[in-house]
Amino acid sequence: MLTFASGLIIIFGALKPDWPYLALGLSYMVGAAASMLVREALVPSTQPRVTQVMAVMLLIFSLYGFADLARYL
Image 1 (cartoon, rainbow, N blue to C red):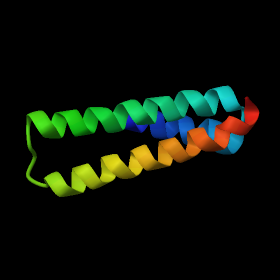
Image 2: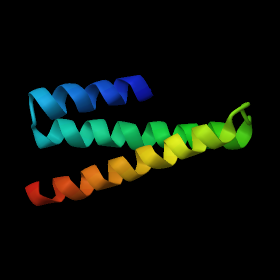
Image 3: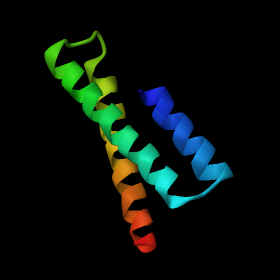
């Protein structure tokens, strides 16, 4: 899910900057980050801090992207 979200952001964000595709990619990224946090809460991994930091960074990046997309509305 995270790979698909990153691919959407890279392909449609850099090559074809249409806001609906960016919104779709960012929403997938929010879902992937939430999935990482829930998975970490249910089944802790050997490196929980790295996973949590990465998920929070993805959420911040996604929310910043949504704030940037607000100019298209």
